[in-house]
Length: 358
Image (cartoon, rainbow, N blue to C red; front, side, top):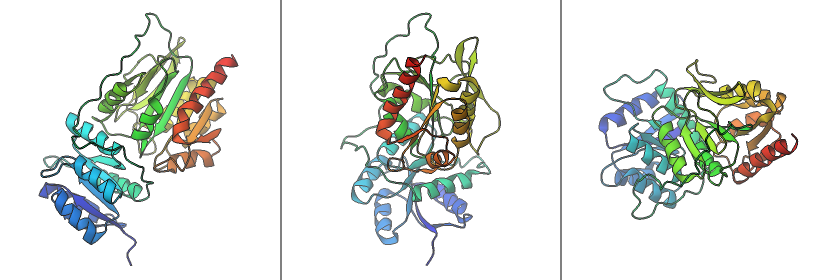
């Protein structure tokens, strides 16, 4: 009996179905068992073919991707990877799909452009991660669920002449990280230390991710720009395609961006951020490593620990994929391990202890 990962492709475009099928044929551990043109066809094929993983188009006729995903996760929860366009609406729908229980997403191939050389490997890695993911109870869509930007939470204005943050909370995440970061930031007080975040995510999605979080949180959340001063009560998301790192310059803590080559196959890379924290922030840093596949962040977190930082890893039970936290724990780079719903509390407590010890 084959041990291959059985994949069902769901997309209303025949060309996209064929492209994805051809791409995945080259993966020795993946088998495309079928391709459905709409949600109703997909529903029947899921019953007949029993796939391990579903790839699902974001916008489809008859029943849109969100409505189908919501029904699927109620009736037969299974790993789903969204195939998303990089438009503003596509980005927003994708984040809603992740809230509803999709494990991850990949950008849709453009039929009029040559796909990148590593595109097939990228999709394959997401499918492998989805197959081993721990499915979380989704936040449900209502019957009239529509894609709208969240209501803006009023922010306290930054006083003129405010100093940059003394402390820094540095966060790294990958698969499952969009929801983990959302939970970590919601409830973060407006006087918290500055927060720098690397979430593995392609270009054109990080700005929408930051805007979405900014509307949900008390603190200000933005996509990082080069030389942003890192302020208390602010979180800075690494832009897709660029490394985020931090530096102290004449007493100011600044966000920096770099287009240096990928690290651990990623740009932005968690290790890139964490290593800069070790070099420039030292004992004033708190490192947080969350759910994700692979080992990005473990080596940088060890360097942070050597430099005096306090490090926290998400535990296995609350991680969608325990790969990144496990690697950091096994390197002895972590001081404590906590469930997702305790990470914010642990990070703030570590910052308070450092303040008291001054």
